[in-house]
Length: 306
Length: 306
Image (spheres, chains in turn red, cyan):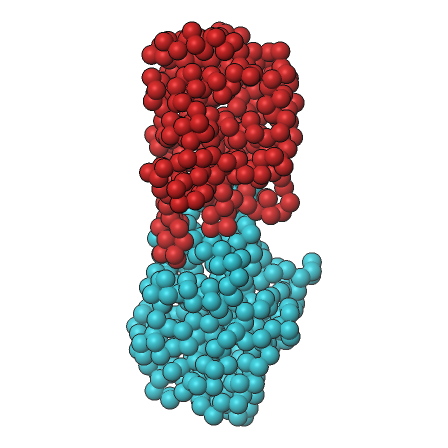
């Protein structure tokens, strides 16, 4: 059993590859929920959904979010009614948010709702939210703090980010099964997700970082940075906002207290000596994943390290 | 200004005709909300929506409910997630329920939400729910009481109805503008809607029936029954469940305390003497509306009575 920490897009690619190589039932996935938010009074959990759609084989790989071949009829009419339409909810995707909100309002925890929605799509992996408590990733900007989705989707990361806050993390608990999965895993893999806003919130949930530190099994991270540039999105800007240089070395520093191996791109081999001085081994692998074969190949590379 | 009492389907047809003949801004429509219900945690108001879609020119006239050319992608996925799918929510239609629920949860009254959603679609008539309070039409069956939608849509009126209850009607108030519209109108028209479950709930809201009785302007009803058979749906069965014979005479008896004129089909002329003995005038008009011209023609016939 592998325990995997992930956000949405980048993590989904690696998880896609790993699920092909090991079978999904070998994966216990601890997913960021710091990006969750409420829109139209619906509870939306973007990273959990991206991972679920990926594992169910219905993800829109092209866009990196949502359901393949989805339509946007409801959204178009929501806009007519004056509802916000910057978050592109497809019709098929909307069903998930409606069903989840219904379950949550009926008293289900986010874990229970996630489990039910995952099974409904035939997801074979164990997919866990990092916490059943609300932890909200907020981005400091010159105009004040905004939610991650507002920064990322509504403002298209065009505004300066100067701080990342995991609101209410200190009062949160890991969701049921999270610590157990980390302790039972034969290895822990941190996906090439944004350290500031995908992996950071997970590690901010009290108990999770400690469980990773304590395991005697290998802890491996895949760098989300290649040659100083993010593989996708504003990873570099948000790392800088947390005071970390957006390099493979910066990634390693953030995880150095528990990390055994950082998998980095050959382009970043110049950082290897300085990373290894932190007590973190380095392995070069092609970490850019465009095709399914890229994903599977990286997954095989990681499995070979175990 | 005409004040109109209506349910969904049958009423929508007449309102369509009236709006063409008088202009929509001449209509103040008091709409049944006894059929309203909550599904998927969304507040659904079928009659208000049918009337709004009709006045906005986007109704699915073929089906008699929902938005023309709507798609059902979200519903298909809601079913995957284990949500009930007997109530056929289209994607465009769903947007209205999401927006309304959002407005209601944000503190808007049903009137305010209705007004906002109506304006958004360019509805020119004044569309009012009968009440901002929850009044629930429930149908007694041999297996106990069920909601109107469960009777009508889920069970397709295949179960015996032996009672109709307007739950909490006694504690409800007319929505703002309803009594004013009834008092100010130059005539009040009761649409050919089900007397038991469309007009009945409206009249059960304290103050509405009295306001109609008190007006000195003509009060005209169009019969929803032709030759002992309902123009659509289970009108006959539900009238019987309230102890009323499903005939033009039965309709007249139910409204006799305030009705000036009952418009009935030529097929029902045999009832005229007995209806007029109740103090209700009768007028024969072709009341079956299939085409837009049928609707306009009936509307012109009614306007000619004023």
